[in-house]
Length: 510
Image 1 (cartoon, rainbow, N blue to C red):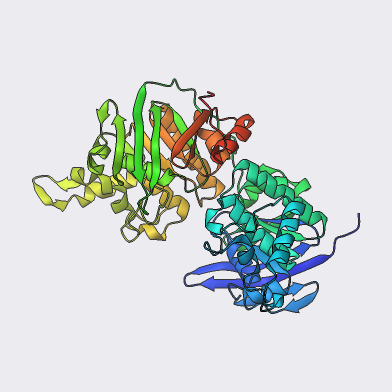
Image 2 (cartoon, rainbow, N blue to C red):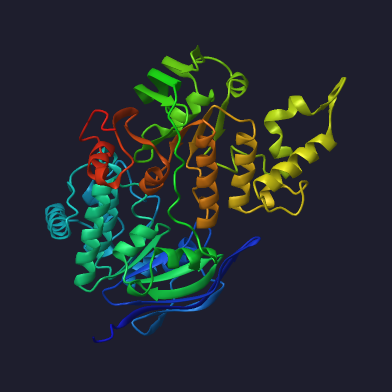
């Protein structure tokens, strides 16, 4: 087979931020008509590297070559002139503009007067050709998240970009939308376009890529052909040791209903209903996975169950008691624990020590007897040392500020605090987001241990593979309503995708 031509080389790229070496002497290359996957957990340096290539950041050191010619990319405009386009995790569209207006925005070569009909015709042609159809006249604010991503990609194709950077492109897509994206990528590469696909999902990487470069802590671990490795091998490259990807669920008898939600209505920060007449039941010894595209009420549901967000109407019943309008502290005493999505901003106090973060919810039991104004520091330290050992928290000392720990160890601190009280209900919101595979494995095992003890777990996760791996049932949420239930089986992925997109309702298929 003829060797493909190299279209891009990034050599010895180094980039640091205050206190962080984001890219450490990184070198990669990209060939014509291939998909190169950049694999690694959050913080590995993937996005920073691509932001340098697209001109958002400037490297402290290193060189970039396009088709063998050294280029200086100081801005996204320079990148686009060099044929490089990037679809970022957070879209950069103007909501009040139409699709076509967003696509031609900033394109000086179109002249002062833009021929709208010609632009719309070309957009329709590109959309049909690549299976990325979108209405060129529609205002962006009226489009779904998946359609907005199509607009971003069509904008790059319209400019003639031959190197596309897709940064975590499936994070906001339903399974059907993700598969449509993969079909479009395959068509692009067949026509000579080269794609850099940033991800931390092993299944996606194995499906779409030709070669895979693994980054860890800002360095290149290695680059391999997809045919020469499997998911376990990739996991080992990412973590540095063998990782058990398939975790066996404990055989636990599902008990009585512990948490019951009836016709719940909750507003979001914009004062709009994010949860709209939602009802569900959660049983002892059960993990119920909530599947849905981000922004469909998951955060508001978790916060309202824990008492952080006001309930407009409906009921929350815990073990037969109506707790709809009770305080957070009362819910904690009744046995609800919460593992929030934001482990640094909400789940911990970064400047406090590991020990202080571990006892935050149990301070009443740590006062000096007969003196409510002083804390028993010896008891706090003893409790912290016990939990540090039990949850394998890697920290120099219980007195170390929690902000100095890795993301995985911060999450262990949160889990230790939330689960050491033997809760009856656990609300776990994206508990593995940003963690490496080793830390993810620990979180999975910990939640399954709680299930084995009889706890009821509500798992709000963005990744279907995580929901399938842990859950006993899957509930699909769309615009604040439960669209239906399925077993945690990939065989139901089409039905789940349709429900996630709001195009189908179904009864309990479990």
